[in-house]
Length: 518
Image (cartoon, helix red, strand yellow):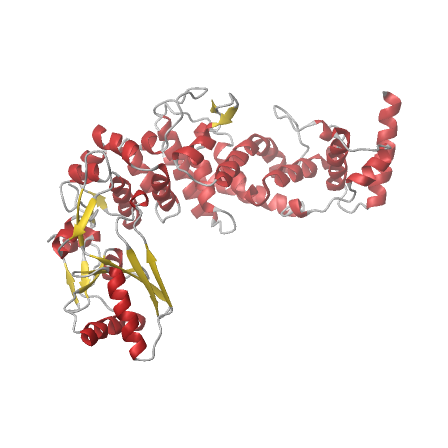
């Protein structure tokens, strides 16, 4: 196994003033009722505090009572001192959502504290939902996903406890290791594969070699697909994409041959997706991530930008739904494979649909020259637009389609601009010439702002449907009104200083000519 550089880990945990107040009241509760309970903070809080990071997610494990029982004791103690807990809640067990035991919650000093008993668990062959029972601190530590997440901070003794005998060492040497053999650990709960990847990427730690072998094993991949809900998989992927190292996380998923397990496809996709296409997805994600850093983008949705880049190679693929309607493949991945919001799928699909139009406009936006409409169907409402105004009109309509996501669409477009890589090539980062693409993005962005189109979707039409019906002498609305609404908006974009009266005059004249020609 490759040796990672040592990580700076604190010798002891330094409590904040708020944490001191919270723990003081919990210890006083023990004294007040003469309880022999050991209070241990578990998991991520211990890890993060040892790494010198702040953490507000405090989970307390109890060795001899249920969380709800202890919360009642704390509440009673606080009442005796004249204090009142800011909030109380009991979260029932929900094994399907990975909540295997009831958790009691209490709000103290503006922090929610979770209380649960120590436990050990036993898994059946075909379920990731274990049988739970009270356990010792050591049993609880060994049932956890990773050694770095198995550490305890004993509030009673003010000491860090490492029952696996390697949690601290793995933290210091930056290693992602399971407390028990990884094959058994992953077959018991395959979600731990994705958690290992997420934490490995987040902390830039090295995945243990035996862990990688187990994660890539066909039995584990089958268990991940069969035993884990797609919603839980989607949540882990979302945390990776939204995290600080999304490229590293997806690279791990690719290296462990988990890409198509996670981003599963429906049975029939047209055209067929090449097995090795995931390499191109990872390359686009990497390029978009680097480009975001280069540009310093802060005013758009980074998460959906990365998803748009990741699924870029799939933008031309579709599948038939139950009604035999052809649906973009990306819709299936978001809504079925990852169980994300329908709006996420719609946004990424709209971004993908806008790319060809953006690509056709980029040369003109870079040179501020005449627009040559080729290979893209813009619609007949743009045929009569003066050449000198066409760039502003077409860009305005495009931005009105994708609204706040136009910068995302522009960034993704720059990755495709004069680029012809495919799934069969060895893809290297400098293929994209990111400095050059940064220049393209910035120049086009500035051109759009200079055209006064940055928030063009907020532009209120000069004329409404009723005005148009009067000009066309129609008694009811219909497709003709819709067509002329688009034409009127096109005129408005071509004449930024134009008035409603001028627009109506133009419409009357144009419509009159059209009637005469017909």
